[in-house]
Length: 613
Ligand code: F6R
Image (tube, rainbow, N blue to C red; front, side, top):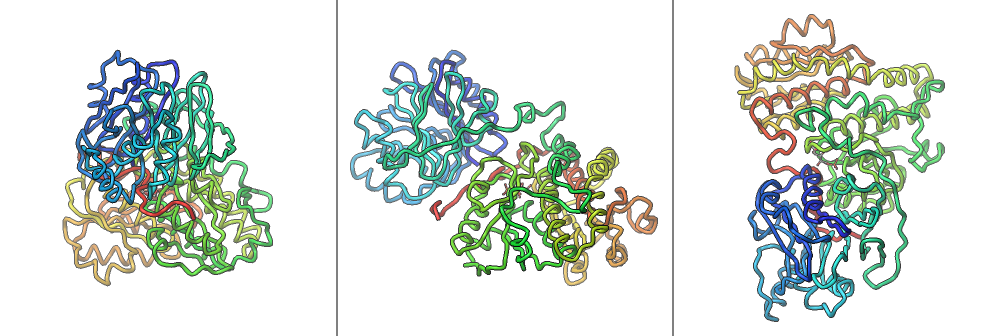
């Protein structure tokens, strides 16, 4: 989604803004632009397409030590130079960048047009600089606040004025905004990654905040000038984690990081002696946890498949009724909130609009909602009633990989805690703890299959359609495998529970439609093998992900990826990684842009509902 960066300090602003925008590229965008202030004048440069187009258009010696930049992901108006941000008022003295959606922009536009304002873009955002200009009498902060009173919708905004050098005014309502505090310089951005090269000292803005920033200080108030106290936080990871580290893409790097990211997510949380786990952030006593009689986990996309896996696991090992639900459905469904139900929201970014609003809707109805998130300081962890950070480290590739296995890790720990409070014996608990502790090594073993997986991916890269089939705990993994393949290779892929095949989808099986079967060594193995035979009988090619030494599967399948034997509930981990690698190699073979697939954004924040509950 759109990205914002703003700078004021002593250095050349244009260079810092373009570099910050490059750091935000991973979020997905279609155009970009900057506005830089110098000598009571703002220079605005905007370009459709890649940031390299913008970079080529920005003169190397463009003077100015303050300014704002933006990467746009079009919502209102086509993708072109003009519709890109920053947007300006008619005098060219005011520039703004905006993330979010102004819902009442048509009415505002009509009103301003009637007052003589000429609009030059098709965007909703252009009403903002014109409104600020209307209220401006020498004080940008005052004019921005007045403007905000007229806006309905969501925003993260940063504004600058040519006559107020080295000053930025930012505001947040539903779209993230972070202040970065450097040595004699300040940053405002939608995401800490934009400023990590300069500072790790940050202040996360909250909905309703207005922040006024100069080179050395900042002040935060609400729209009516009431002071709002802020805490300075330190970002807990390094800029090095945002580099490709010799890998050709972030996605491959992130796939290969999984032994370490899973380990980080477990660190200090496994209790080997008691065969259980500890999760500090739940904010719940053991007594409260024991009273829970149902768990509902909400999420979107890949995170929803992690949620679904864990709902299966909770029922299996803790014997608690559990469901995963899509946030985009719950959000509009008027959910029934039951006091005995514990709700989780799972989100890598912590900003996904559907998940955030679903959480707020549940909280409004009295639910206790815990978050499972990666991005520290993002909105969901700040607004949830407790939760767990997955400590995956920054995930830059649009397609989620390491965050998925880290989400599983966090929720496996929770499931183990719940299981040990109920039916599970210490001996069985210890077996799960040992199996989890061994996971980083098991994933290392799977990663060694890289070139074998590449060969298989190359072999089938010309196929137009795939099935991914699993059962029980690996059914959500089949769904995730299909999603990974379609989002980065653009090949049609369907995930199904293998048991459903004969109820319809089998009609599509033919010689050129491969099926990827997940065959763990568990109680459902025989069932899956029968499903494989159904496909084989119809001449469908089969790629199996099976357990080392499974001769029977090897005999039926055309190609096999053997994973190590693990505890029966750990197969989702060792089976999802080969599917990530499979999708990756297919996409590379087809020449796709792996890290930034078409039409996708890293964090889907395009919300259309008022932010506050
Ligand atoms: C797919 C992918 C998306 C996200 C979904 C939710 O690879 O990354 O499906 O999982 O948009 O995002 P978060 O987890 O940030 O809420």
